[in-house]
Length: 336
Image 1: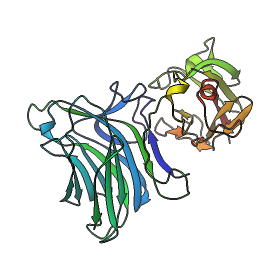
Image 2 (image 1 turned 60 degrees about the horizontal axis):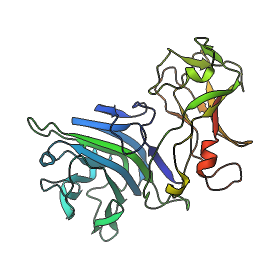
Image 3 (image 1 turned 120 degrees about the horizontal axis):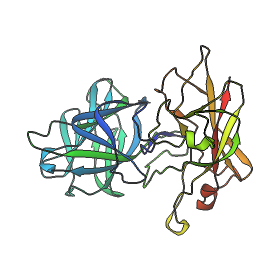
Image 4 (image 1 turned 60 degrees about the vertical axis):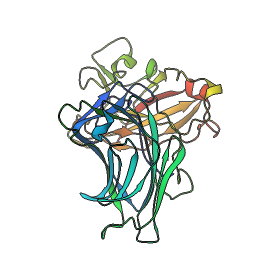
């Protein structure tokens, strides 16, 4: 598996990211939420060291596009290796370091969602490569030197909305993020079309954890988006206690869905004891469990607690179907 990052902001928070003037927004390409990067705002996503990768994101802007809102930078530390931005003619531009190397041809408009993909290959001439797709179509590419200095890898992505000028009143929105490397034979090329939605707890199946407060149904303690911190939650202190929940239907129509490429569990959890605490998130498809790896918890809500991504329905295994997704159960289990 070579998917490095998948994010649709569907839990309604920015836990796990470094951000300034970045907010969760109801303006979304899919699902309930997207990321709003306001004026002079940014969000940083740290990555492994990558010399070649494929990045995907949905982008939407409100306001005057003459003020150049979008800049996506791939960096090593704070050293900029490359930039994708929009110029004053509302056309995409590519930079190696601070040098313009390629310009697109398609005019972008405000209040319109675009799907932008970038293939980044860091290397000296003739081995460097930068390619850009817009809504699935090749926009432009650059084949030459993409390594402006000594750094042959990038280790973070910066999504930035630079100062738009007085009265610019513009905002950039991002959604449906994906990042692939080139290893492993799966998810090793263009991310392609992708929309990220959430399905949420709606009924109890197994209730071994303790509720706070003691409501009738456990699922009512864990269905808040964004999470309500310590207002409602479930808690366990005995290894391998679990809560399992029925999940809401996806709302997808099988005839309209080309494929369901990945399913995962995500939660907001913390450790409330003096000892190290771990949990595992899991799914149930029919009678077959897909068990996530154990996750070590922090003492506060600062960790994105996630299972691995299940690329196939564990009850098979086979490709995911809308019917299997709609029948899915999921939950959380205490571990060592």
